[in-house]
Length: 307
Ligand code: IPD
Image 1 (cartoon, protein in one colour):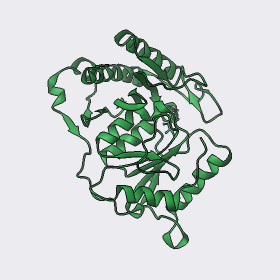
Image 2: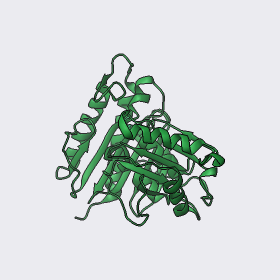
Image 3: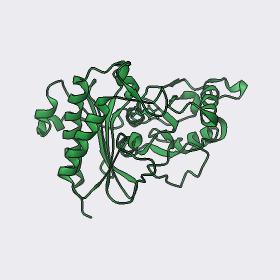
Image 4: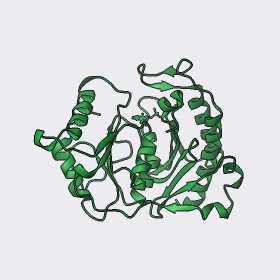
């Protein structure tokens, strides 16, 4: 298929800006939100309304493409090789419910399970990240009230910053990194223990067998975490349990900024993983040391996640 990817990206940007207006207009609360698997797995009416809006727009524009979205996913549904939109209407639902402004709309497009176009938009900060496979990734600052009308205005495109935002420095080891590691909503069994052990090893001193990272962060949106690693403002992101819609869009943005996504468990650096892999280690772009850093993580820090 010959798909016009820049046009598809422009459509995703328009939809993300409109979805952002729905999100900032909502008044969520911890008491009005519902839960899915357990009390830490939140969903709101806004998640559902925003996904319905996004899927109807995409079906109108691209009737022959498949759609996978967090709120309409049915257990057993598989991401196929056909062109597929992979959508999280609100990535960072817990932040949204608590009105913490680290929230995004994550619009991904995958072909053969390879993340191909990504748009991630935080409507509270106005940061809009986008990327097309093979064509680079960008950050655009959307100013309040300007977004929807002026999206196609070329003036806006001049305000794009290519990612990464700073000159990539070499990665010299985990002891000079800030690492993102999330709780996620899965809090039971061996996976939860692995996450806690990983957190402990990251922070502990080298004398005591740890990695002594600069610090760790748990910010609450997988998509924005990947964008921060793409910017180069965070170095590493490790998580298990997230889904294709959490990572598809951010993945394109990160890899186009020189970053790399590999298996969270010790694995082969050369072997690419599909977007529905469920456990990820993402590393920022660097002039040197990327592979060594991944191997340090796999050897000294990681336990095995079972997803
Ligand atoms: C979640 C967020 C969170 C991550 C979870 C995701 P949601 O997505 O990205 O940071 O730790 O694994 O499920 O539920 O807010 O769309």
